[in-house]
Length: 170
Image: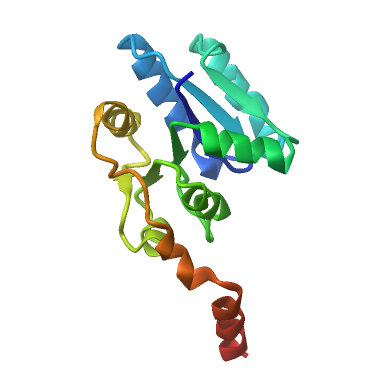
């Protein structure tokens, strides 16, 4: 089954609503894809479940929390693409994980994601379910593997380099 993965705590800034509304648009166009959201359980999760139910997407969007690292790794390995729709982030560990697992990646167009990826990647307007929908369709029907980000962007995040940066700060 073709599914898209999004990882992060269930909170408003993670912008799951945009993904949910993009899923609704895809569904209306007859494009059958699934979405898996993985995160820490919060009160905001109740709100997301309500939207999913109201849009009749309960068979298309799956919500997971408290899963093992092995199960999370399997989701990264088997997803068609990783979507990071955040409105803002301090850093974005799931993005690093997705790059490390060689996922296709679709990112909201925010500064930190551009910095982490050296402006490489596919970006969308995080206020636009339509734009995300377009990017999802593009990943499905595009033969060129332009949605992967080369792992060499992770070289700047080695333990030695991070340690040296912290020492410089002090």
